[in-house]
Image (cartoon, rainbow, N blue to C red; front, side, top):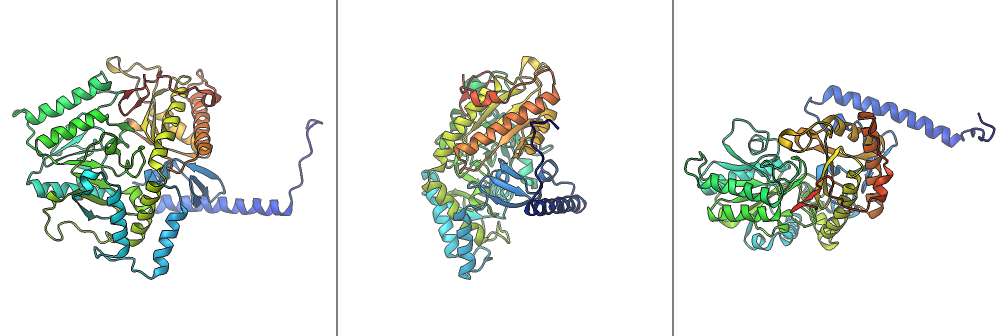
Length: 493
């Protein structure tokens, strides 16, 4: 020991007790994780890449059983608009519990349900709210997708469906049929426009126009093999597909094309809704009014709730045509009404737009120092960073291939630094940030600093010859355009 170094302090009794407690908690943690791996199905996902045991949470922060704290930018896959255990959500739940009201009522009317529906309708696009019907579904977004597909097939008498490459609509059979990874199903798959990996190799407005022309030609060509479908279903921003915003002009074209041919348009807003993208509903960016909106995640205020809202003219169902035992979840409706009102009254959608643009700019600056960042894109607080192998040429002179091992390494490096992020996109090469809408400026800085440090560490380990200082993020001036960083309407440059 150097003479200038102080002697190690003798731990106090309190510190020793705390150390013993944490050691005990560590053992309990391992036991819980071990039992989970033995008891739960092989289909578990997040538990594999995020081996933590949350015991407390508030806002952005999760505390694990081992005492470590994490900044949660997964937010229940976008469910937690207000973060964990927000006071207005807890108060709404407590109020119902203390009132003695029934917690389970199937589809009976209750004051709680009426308050939720009233608040939800107050936020809907005016062209839909003025003449809408609502169907409460099973507790997950995928059931609401199933309900939407059943609804339009009943109303139109048609069975076909238009969906998009890269789509994700859930894990039940019908929802999977409409998703991008489906095989051998009677769904016509259309190109979803994107700038970085444009299916036509051009990107921007031209790429979006070609995608719209493809759709129009497919529907009008009598030899296309596609008959007039029951509906078109799309995500205003593809989340699991890699955080790809649909360009506003293209969204308007899809609305024009479907309306002109009497094809109902279904907007899947399960993840994009309730302020996430910088508007209360993502369709509001383009100004379109869909015929059906599929809603879940944030509308339940952290509890399970899913609904579809649709034009009254489509309401051709017979009684009981779609049902679900838990469609009367009173606690979720109370928490959801409180969340919707809080987001609306505090203009959190506007906040998400402002803070999200700032975070995108900082990440685009980081890309200038890291060739492994192929693209930075998103809308509001729905952000994606696509990681690539810059040393391998892309096919047809396109972008470099996705570097999925690097993305996994970055996710694990983030976790090691107390930051929880998700992976998505093709080949799981996109690091996704879905922080709560209550994120503060200081928290945003901490998230970006930890991500930058994790990226630099993972890149050094992955490609030792190309280190990059994490401090560049703090000094980055803003969008550079080097990585072709994209928003909803085209490249930033």
